[in-house]
Amino acid sequence: MATATNPDRILPEIDPSTIELGLDTFGDVTEKPGSTDLVSHAQAIRDLVDQAVLADEVGIDFIGVGEHHRIDFAVSAPEVVLGAIAARTKRIRLGSAVTVLSSDDPVRVFERFSTVDALSIGRAEVILGRGSFTESFPLFGLDLADYEALFEEKIELFAELLKDAPVSWSGTKRGALHEQWVYPRPESGTITTWVGVGGSPQSVIRAAHYGLPLFLAIIGGSPAQFAPYADLYRRALVEFGRAPQPIAMHSPGFIAATDDEALDTLYPYQSAQTAQLGRERGWPPPTHEQYLQQAAPDGALYVGSPETVARKIAHNMRLLGATRFDMRYSMGTLPHPEMMKSIELYGREVAPMVRELMASPVPA
Image 1 (cartoon, rainbow, N blue to C red):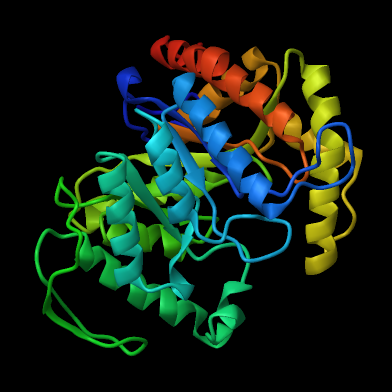
Image 2 (image 1 turned 120 degrees about the vertical axis):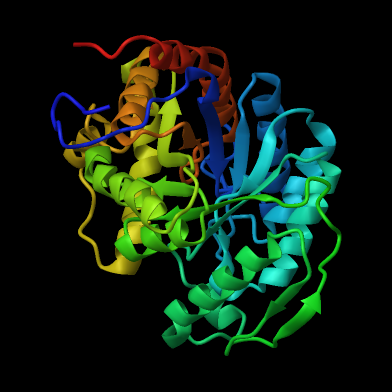
């Protein structure tokens, strides 16, 4: 359908029954309740498992666990954490957010997620990406000069591994495979695999080339700025002769009973984390005005009451033609109890409201 603001855009009709609401986290190391002291990495991981169990109980569709190798994030082996979550949950799907494929081995990634798939009885997903941090490259003895070549070769190999057939492949960054099966085999024959993209047209086209669904990481600016990437992806799928694939979107957020409570609670933690990243990357210090701009209706931060957040999610899903929204619910040292409250509101109030809004006619 053409949009009211841009009649040249053609968006797919979204079946409301396909709408999915997920969560993701980097396993941030958090403050102890009532203290500025931090929990241990071990406790942060145990808390994350409890968060996933709650997400399952309140009906959330997916939880993604990010991979990092730095002091402020506890999870460096997401698949191990996902295996623990699989044993304590029943229906929620489990995946990465993202798997940094450039600094990993595609065969090992496939084996690990196939194992999670077995433990969860078919609930595993992989989101492949290049990652927003590069600490894994020196850690694993890789050259950042090979950044592009590593990802290009490894996603090519991973796409071959997804086929339910022996693999023959050769490249320049790892040994070749000849008629090689990789085990354990997923019971369905494959593993649901997305390509996470942060705003590169080349990455969008690459996802379409392999016929893999697209996951847009919208962590700043306006979601409207990503509409051209969604359009490019749909056009590229047609040009490559690929079947239509879903588009998902990911953004940070936090939910409380009222807008003011949510904004006031999250701000010190979001501001401190943004300031830390800014010092590392040479950005100017963040301001409260910028925070409020990002939390406004056209910003990338989903902070507010359940109704505020639900309306913003539904609006932007329609804008991009997306069928899934994942909210990054952890933010710096935000304490575990606050995240648990936010997760409960997201599952019990936001998700049903989004589905209801998406099933309603588009406002004139």
